[in-house]
Image (cartoon, rainbow, N blue to C red; front, side, top):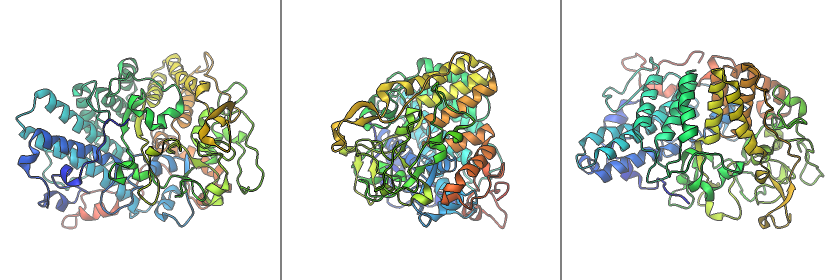
Amino acid sequence: MKSFRIIIPVTAIIAVVAFYSCKKDFLTHTPQGQLSADVLASPSGINALLIGAYAALDGQNVGNGTPWGSSVSNWIWGSVMGTDASKGSYAGDQQGMNEIFNYQSSTSNSFFEDKWKADYEGISRCNNVLKVLPQITTMSTADTTNIAAQAKFLRAHYYFDLKKMFNMVPWIDETTTDYNQPNNTDVWPNIEADFSYAYDNLPETQSEAGRANKWAAGAYLGKAYLYQGKYADAKTIFDNIIANGKTSLGVKYDLFTNFEDNWRPEDEATSPEAVFPVEMTANAGSFDNANYGDMLNFPYGNSPFGCCGFYQPRQDLVNSYRTDANGLPYLDTYNDHAVKSDMGIGSGQPFTPDAGNLDPRLDWTAGRRGLPFNDWGIHPGADWIRDQAYAGPYANKKNIYWQVTPQFHDGSSWAPGSAINYLVIRFSDVLLMAAECHAQTDDLAGAQALVNKVRNRAANKSGWLYKYKDDSDPTGGFSTTPAANYVISPYPAGYFSNKDIALKAIYFERKLELAMEGHRFFDLVRWGIAESTINAFLTYQKPFSADIATASKFVAPKNNYFPIPQNEIDITTVNGEKTLTQNPGY
């Protein structure tokens, strides 16, 4: 099942000062109760440091902030901000989130600092690996290079996360001695350099599934090029990965036969789709390992999960899965073909689910009343929703473990934990990024073929949601009757007739395929359509979603990035001179 997971004591992995921000004090004082330099300068010591750098991926145990602001899934930043989902729960819960998704963020909102600290903690741990590594004389050149390349891969990941969140951030590496660095230079070249080093030097396979390999580094380098509009460079790398890439355990990259298998822990070790997974484990000594950052995101009320009713898919997202008579999406008019919901209807009142044509991925993405909710029974609607009038009638589904596999549930805390990995990059993401690059470089037929590969997987009937054989015993399995009227087809030959049509279809396919996975907001920003898309969403969604009833308009370029945390500006001010510059508009 799980081949590699970071679950060792903190004192064994943080052997130099943890750097929670750019504040110099955290970087220069002598740590207490931690390992000495001579112990670290050994093969076992350097591996402990590297595992510590991996351990920071989940964003937990950093300062005193909330786990959700620093979650590796970016569910607040990528999906709630990107219109996939409501915060959920009720108005008074986690109020710091409210101003964020209402586009009214203040620089002192602690959620921003939670994210800033988590990423710089990861960077610090990577830098510590690279500082200590040259002191070790008993390792082979191949092993030394592998460790350096993993550390640089991880460092580039943390900086990539900061870059897409805050844009201009200070660069701190293993050679830095003055930690009060300004944020007046673009870090893209440094990110590229780290990913390039990893791509050139990491082996194709690793001894453990959780470690980055050559192909993961290539996918991330291609993504970095894509974000900068370097489409030809990205295309070359993505095409190579699609043809030759494999997971760290040597499984050739491909799509799972069934879409929902991406969220089944029993299939993770042999997954062909896990390009860069962050490993989660239940009941393994620390609840942090069970996706602590997403523990709020389960159905509430009398559901079997108990807590906490956050992260509810929006009606706008659900409507996106409507298909026409030919099984194609309504790219421009999906909200004119709204999917029927049980909004305002109590669980004790009759309700019949929508009978129109739908993309089957909807029902592995959003829990809807009247349909099977994995093997937990028929979703009853309002009884599992904390405040339907506030956040809508739907439930998140991609993070839901199954009743039949209780070993993947961690019940050691006050809300559920899960062993479902978070996939920072999965293979369908690579296919769609490659499709975008093909379209941008005028290979429209190639772009359409890549999109259709993703759509054909969704059209595979073996992967659809089916009704239960027996509603009274949902663990008994599924029947051969689809749970809804699923109609989906690939785009017909010649549909990508020009670049504008091709890109519109690719952008929409990313919305359908990667919904609720923390990508949407960052995609909208890099495409230059965040302002128009989000404001159109607000116009549609506001009348029946109390959580955004007073939301401000999204204003670009200000809202394309989040504010530099005010506390970070304050603690790096020297002799009255600010080291960090606030983002425009804040």
